[in-house]
Length: 442
Image 1 (tube, rainbow, N blue to C red):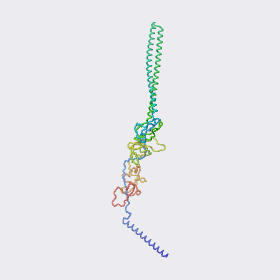
Image 2: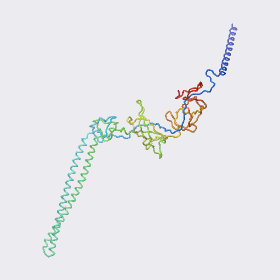
Image 3: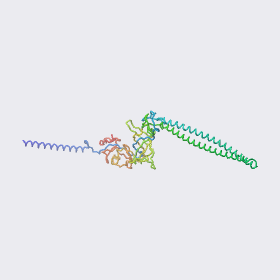
């Protein structure tokens, strides 16, 4: 029984081996017949051709656009501070976050009673000083008249002395009369001196009165200024922010109550690397005034504003590198607010002899694939000058002038591969071309 089972097993293995040999012979015959006939499933006698998008490279002047980020700031700000200590008795309804105010509009009024009382007191003091000055000037006039009368009397006394001396020369008159005339002349001279002293005192009184009036006017102007500082007005038209004032609150001197921002005087602070800054510097190392576009992206849409480079920061913050430039917003900044984080597109100087191509056309080796007239690919190294989003700007060497390059490189493509332009019509009966499903290919 065991012998019979072994015999049957051996017979089965024999027939199985013969069947496998027949199958192998059939497969070999089929392969030879397929090669001889020139056709077969999944086989081709011609070289495989890939379909890809080709583009022509032409050197020209290309203007790169630098895309950076910045923060919107206000070029014109005003801090509203209390000019006097006291209680807030009036608060304008516009004194709230985002409130619109006009130039000269009264925003806050601090209790003016103390300042008004001081002003009235200084007004009265000024009136007293004016009255004193008028009295001093009248005294000067009286002293002047007294001096003139004393001088006339002294002249008469001197004339009387001269007559007595003339009579004495002719042997007439008495000595006592001559002495009396001389004593009267001397008294008249003393009266003149006393009049001059009185006039000088009156002039000094006028000078003192003038100085007192000037001091009173200064004190009056100071009192008026103190009264005006109880009124806080808007220096220019703008929007109110950082409001801390509340009606009825006691405020101290110089306490900040709010800020006013001019929405029409906005700028963007843009940090740049040294390489980026060097591209924007004109002759002499000065920042060139170049056009810029400020973009604020949000869920509601894309807001744009036109701007122009204005200046560069005068110093560099400690521990920082690069440069900070400021772009002044010219138009379209109505929707922007200080503190917005925006992107800025700055037009750089044009580059001659360059071309803009898709970034996918440049491989990891820094080369592009160039197709010759037959569609055979070859690798040509290129120098990437700028990266512009999904594109790059390259310097066009002589080997690429007018050449066709692969727009999007795929792993199947390389030097020596035969390709066909996807935009060109396929040759009739061409069954060997294979399309490449890469970025941008259909």
